[in-house]
Structure formats: structure tokens, C-alpha cells
Image (cartoon, rainbow, N blue to C red; front, side, top):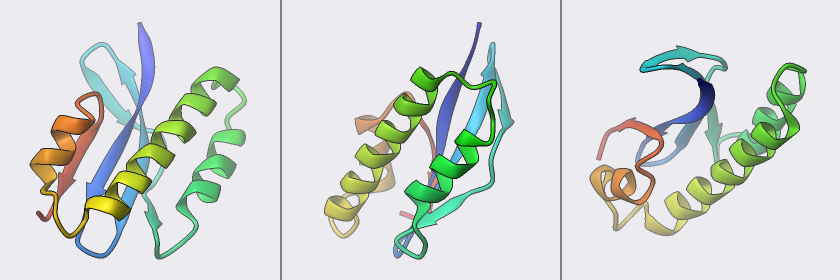
Length: 99
């Protein structure tokens, strides 16, 4: 069974979002990182996903919805929540970062 997941780079001043293709227990990068609020990461991610017709519309919508949720959480939590707290909030995603 294959699926997609977001890889999150949790930083002090930005959040990076990338999509990985999941095959079994292996992860393969599908996109580069898109950084928010430095850039319009959501639209960049949307454009990148739209360029991949083999990804179902349902998967695209789920990834974009999850990206929105993570971006909103980062915006609200960046000064008060640690990387570990974010990982616990979104256990299905892959996190790395600085705090």
C-alpha cells in the first residue's frame, strides 16, 4: 500500500512543507520544501501537486488541508510550542527542526 505524507521542517521563523511518497516503511521525497511565511507555501504546494496527475484529487485535497492545519498551528504555536508538542499533535507526519 502506498500513500503520501507531509514532511515538516519546524523552524523559529519559518515552516517548511514537503510531500513524501510512502511505500511500506520507506519514504521517497516527492517535492522540495516550500517555506511559509517566507513564500506562499500553500499555493506552491498546490501547483506542485497539480503537476502530478497520477496523484488522486482526494490525496491532493487531504495533503493541502493538512498543510493548512499545520501552518495555522505553527503560526499560533511557534513561540510557545516545541517541536515535540507539534509531533504529538500530528503523529502521522514527519517532523524535524530546531525547537
